[in-house]
Image (cartoon, rainbow, N blue to C red; front, side, top):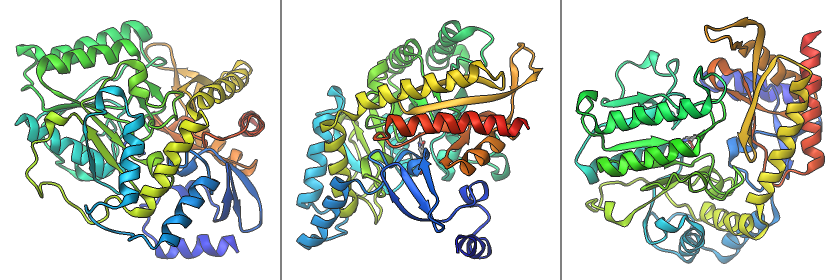
Length: 437
Ligand code: PMP
């Protein structure tokens, strides 16, 4: 039974594993936006492989691409040696990249997003001969020692002692918990970036790189304001600092634009991609401006980079996202989801804020009875955990994130239907009412 699988996992696997603790289900099959457990119960999957499954589960174009690789007898693992499948992936990706990167270079650095962030940092340090890095509060770039150093979350770093040195964190402008409001808050955060990068009295040696997510995901779904993006771009250019956009979660249509950074003027020198570009299989790359390519051969290596099955699934996914206009669809679907959640919020003060871009949406749950120094109700992580569990009982899988894990996060496949979205909103409302009782 499913319970056996959970029990066997509990006995064998490390306690570091996270999802099964909060989602006590074992999955046996999946199609589209639906996953099924052993009892045949169905769930709408608003986690979607943490955003990796842009086309949902078992999309026919992905399944076909995988079959083709196996039927053709293509080599599954070739290190850096070229293959027709690898070539097709590169051509497919470059055809849709933001314009300034189309004559850039790609480095396969997978298989995980964190690996690609590590490579981006190494590239920036190598290219500039500097060591400093600027990251933002609330940032998430992975769980390796280097990427944890960039994390904007204290709790994950405190047990580990000294991580990568010479990392400086600056505030990321947020809409809800800003005493200055979004516009003034964004202007002020932008000034801090300019100050850190260019003012002698900042005391910060000019950094190698600034790294940012165009929409923070794990940090609680925080979209970067366009005015802030413009300032970050201007300040990094003026300082000769490499701008790294981490689009591991936002890339390939998720936010309603093919590339979330491009849409807000965050025109990066290095673009970090993973998740969706592998079509659900492990794949991660950086694409960067050609002039940064000062690597010595062998400076960055690794065994499992650019695996054939992932490249084939990825190329098919990129083609389908563009062919089916799924970025536009994500924008429309995100609007529907957001309006639904706002309707729930209108009747329930425990939904403090609903925000997002495209199909990257968060609802921050609060305790309306307790306010912080700015008069804003405090985040309620306990409630978010209860709502997550109650939604699961109602057939919907969601994740939580942000400060105190109080933000319920919706990250469904881009192909999710209106009917499924309405059921997600209904489950959210019903779960909140149930937790009231
Ligand atoms: N960057 C961002 C923005 C992410 O959302 C994630 C994963 N959630 C990562 C990096 C790390 O990717 P991975 O888990 O594949 O290492």
